[in-house]
Length: 313
Image (cartoon, rainbow, N blue to C red; front, side):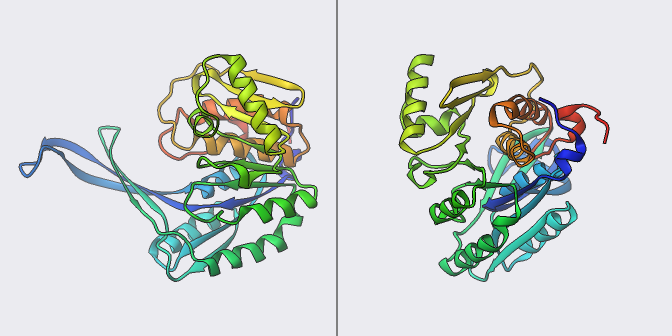
């Protein structure tokens, strides 16, 4: 099933989750430090990008759909920078400000086109900030065609269950990128999109496709989900739903960086569901989007043309 740019432009997705700023320091590595056996990086340039749930919203917009983002940031320089990046990308942002929160930052040091080190800065949001987030959600959710929760285990979705219940009552498709080993708080969603390691943390290992099928379907039933969408890297994507299971094989491409590939997959699914496409029909397009983005460095997005080709307006 195909979709036009005009159809997609009318679709709107509400993204809720952990706001994060990705920073990159690029430099040359020409010697080893005399102080310790580590490379010395002479930093030549730096770059800042939206990360985590903010990158999910960026992917929705880059495809040509509309996105709003609800998250929590600190009253610091990183929070202000993230707000600027969101607004500059055409995303409607609703950021709760938490005076006691340090905005989550992932700083990656890059030398010779390789990541040498990552430094993480983060603190969990307070209850007051999450209460503000919930109030904004109640106001904005009815205005969107799909709700997407992007959980990076940084605390923004500590109270996600009532948000899922409200979205379901409103008849919205609900997609969740899950984290952790307890998925009970995601119960009642339309679909969750774990990767293989995410799913193993919940259901244990499997040794055959039949065993995977049984474990996935049992989990889907327990959580009252319509589907589980399993991203499987080189094995493609498999959806487990009431009709059984369907695997879309990955497209052979050079893998440069898998950072944020899951963001792109779930953003594509959400945009297409908001446009009226079924989950099974959206799956091949999401698979292609993921294959495109792993050919790019760092947290990245894909365009309408890269996923659907050139299409008339």
